[in-house]
Amino acid sequence: MNVAIVGIQGVPAKYGGFESLVENIIGSNCSPDIHYTVFCSSVDMPDRRKEYKGCSLKYVGLRANGISSIPYDILSMIRVLRGFDTVLILGTSGCVFLPILKLLSKSKLVVNIDGLEHRREKWGKLARWFLRFSESCAVRNADVVVADNKGIQDYITESYNKQSELIAYGGDHVMRDVSEKQQQEILEQYGLKDKEYAITVCRIEPENNCHVTLKAFAQSRKMFVFIGNWKHSPYAEKLYEEYAGVENIRLLDAIYDLDTLFTLRSHAAFYVHGHSAGGTNPSLVEAMFFGCPIIAYDVVYNRETTNNEACYFSNTEELIQILSQEGLEGTKLKQFAEQHYTWQHIAAQYEKLYR
Image 1 (cartoon, rainbow, N blue to C red):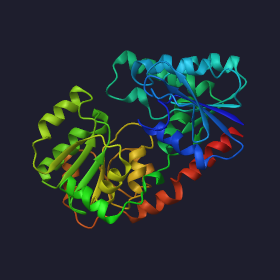
Image 2: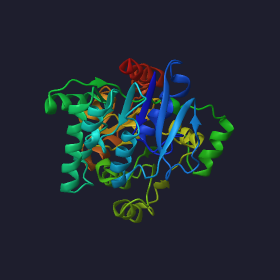
Image 3: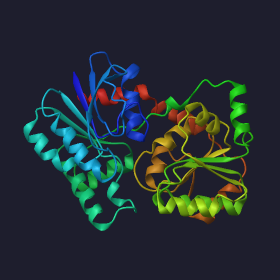
């Protein structure tokens, strides 16, 4: 069975949740009778390797993110008109082309609509209108719609009166075999001690409530490690300027070394998740595997992902109150993740859709 994947920057994964999804459903988690072809950005992936983990890689000469993601996705879809049993489309940026793809192609069209992109604060009115229109094209023309969260699934049913398949993300890829000596060296490098700090890993966006979490920790005086892209936008730069000098806050640029990330997350006293938009967020799923308590922003997506086993906040004052509590628990979160968020399970769910 030949399956094409459209809508990501490329593999090996270097960017976001969809890239991690593809990275982990190909390779060892893939059934032997399925062959993937992944469409990648030659601008973002300049090494242009032809194969990776047993799948074929094809390239489109545009960036995969920002406004160029629309023509990037459309050009990718044009190239999958023939030769594939199934086309898996990740995200809805280019789905204004989906009615034409459906008309001209005999492939089964599977679309993961991701979060509700048109609700994100960073977009203007025109962009939000376009994103909502593109989402509508995706849902109405896909043979199968995938929702990564029960909250997104309910939204699809209520908004479009269409059934969708619920498939979340995996997170077990974050577990690493790092020696005690190496872990201690990494902690010393960042001036941290076991279970004496909180941690967040995310993009610095308003809808991730970075300003709320930073304000709370600045007032609570608890040690806080915040890993993100601090040079990404005026919003990020302003927060960095305001909080970089606060004694108990460490603002770290994005870390891609998996051993370092594993060490920093596994030794944290708890994880703080401020996302208010989207569905099942990969960084939240990953955090659950470490078995530490999680404090998450109080929206339906985060409650569904954590099975209502986390602590939840809606503003700075509520977060400060939670930070003052003792004996927060994370064991049930780890157990739930091990039952529902392994990549072998996720890969099998996608393959069932193809068939």
